[in-house]
Image (spheres, rainbow, N blue to C red):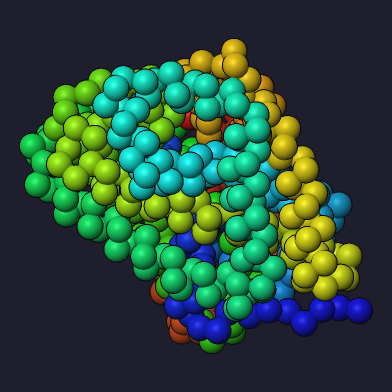
Amino acid sequence: MSQPRGQWSSHLGFILAAAGSAVGLGNLWKFPYIAYENHGGAFVLVYIAAIALVGLPIMAAEIILGRRSQQSPVGAFRVLSEGRAGGFLWKGTGLLGVLAGFVILSYYCVIAGWTVKYILMAINGQLGAMVGDGSFNEFFGSFLADGPAQTLWYSIFMGLTIGVVFFGVRGGIERVAKIMVPILFAILIGLAIYATTTDGFGQAMTFLFRPNFSELDTGAILEALGHSFFTLSLGMGAMLTYGSYMRRQDSIPKAAITICLLDTLIAILACIIMFSIIFTENMEVQKSSTILFTTLPQIFFKLPGGSLISGFFYLLVGMAALTSTISLLEVVTSFAIDELKIGRRPAVLMTGGGIYVFGLLNAWSLGANETLTSVNIIGRESTAGVLGTLDYLASNWFLPVGGFLIAIFTGWVLASRTARQEMEEGHGPLPWYAGWRALIRFVAPLVVGAIIVSVILGAEYQ
């Protein structure tokens, strides 16, 4: 027996939920790190161009497939590929998205759990005390190696994620997004205003917005292209799934553009905040993507009101992570609802429980022999332990291949009149439809294909 399909109550509800899905650790953690590594300026410009030319077209494509089919990723490709060549391949594309959501959530919640620990340490003064007496560096290494502690914080974050999805599209995901995303923006803007008062603000702005193309190499360009794709939660079926709950009267182009703008704005604001603080203290950033949990805490407590700043900052990161993890679980849950024909609540408990058990491997994989530089989560070098291996597979293979196939399917298999109908329904005539179609047929597949080839050839762009 098929289950009644959920639906967003409003266009704003969809925008906030989808923006929350896109905004996560990639914006507040990964992008500032790679922007710093690639000298800002020119790298940031390439990243913004990539969002417009690759991320936006694929974002719209996923939403089109979801709303048209009213199905989870597997069902969407099954329905829309019916009677067309390559049916088995397209069903596999949907299944790849579900698998990516399962795998990514199993380790993403481990990392997100760290934010809960840091929020509590900032509130009770423990974080400031450790920074003050010089014991913080030893803390982080031992924290990673503490299996029971990792399991505790992972369990808390996974429990929060399951709890939100359990209550459905409107009662859970949309309701939480309407509360958390505005709070997230408010905290971010407040911290950005604070950043303008620091001595390093001018240097941060110069670093981010004065391009020096002589510092831009092929690896940096590929990294900007790759991150523009991954930061929007593309290739894993999240936007497709959220699109399947979209109302017919809502505009897909406006939604896709708004989500991309909000995602990019948050990434840029995060850089302004972090670099203003880092340059104010003239502190060397460790060559590790754990900058968020190693470098920043030591800087916060050198500033006036450091305890308050750090508390709000980690609350910001935690909320951003939660809005992403609920979308990952929803991808897997929607698959169980649509394909196994079971109710939402048993589907959430079954899929969430399965991911939780699998994720325990990740919680215990950061052993005592790991070093700070080897734990480069959400990055091309992250091959340490179970967590690093799964991250490598998801980031380097599942998402790029999924995104490539989504672009090919939407551009070359799905009828142009069907795509145009979805783009214009709820929006009106779209004069630049031909431009979008050219991007999804030629530019997006070529760029994502280049990313896949770079992985095959071992190019480290992320």
